[in-house]
Length: 176
Image 1: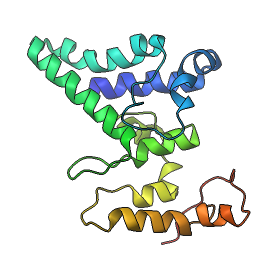
Image 2 (image 1 turned 45 degrees about the horizontal axis):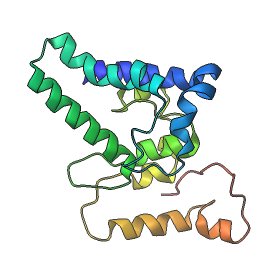
Image 3 (image 1 turned 180 degrees about the vertical axis):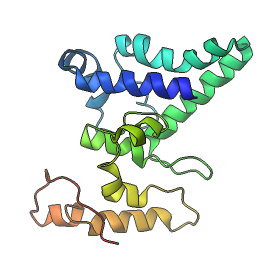
Image 4 (image 1 turned 90 degrees about the vertical axis):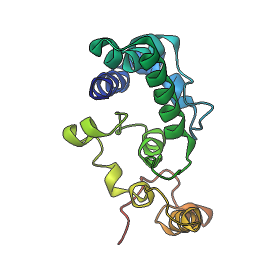
């Protein structure tokens, strides 16, 4: 998992930092503004070859894992990628807001686990938004409802936009 995090974080961050890679490769994945599990692996073939496939293969190859372990790891990695793009909160799994923010803001939150984002400060902006305030695994049936209410009530939320607020304004901090 550590090898995957390092490879994916730096490969993904490079895809954003390089004008060439952004315009010709990674931008394709970001044409999907509202990520879903079905579109999670929608990416340019070059991105798959140099970022996505090595992210999955690096750990098992470095450890000399059995082919069955590699297949299981690949299935779990694909499932995690789909869940991270799905918007669904399932018990005992991480909440998808971390990566949703990346798609909505177009920057930050480059890693799969968030470890290097925390170390490099690329998740700082995320933790100041309503995304982070709602990014938790729900424990009760009302969670999706309180998320929708919070989204509506936040400055720049859907209610304010409907009243003519600035839809392009950045997401503001959540008042506790």
